[in-house]
Image (cartoon, rainbow, N blue to C red; front, side, top):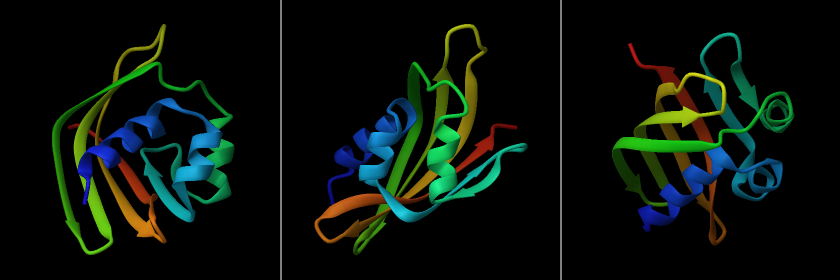
Length: 114
């Protein structure tokens, strides 16, 4: 299991657009965000990308990962930045599964740091 590849994918989910999501996300993926966004799945995730600006930069801290078989979990603290906005700090967890020969994102959750 090559966690470095998964960390690169994770960064791309923060910074890239719908084309990357469509190629690297399971069609039945789930994402959980703080209110008011809430729980998104499948096409809702792609639609959400078009409703706001993308992140210009992101830093990961306290990175940790684990895996079993064809499943891997990344957990970390993220700081996202956009011009004109205060930094967005959140704790994240993402679950990837190996489908055929490729890793895809199955689930992602963001929890505001208390």
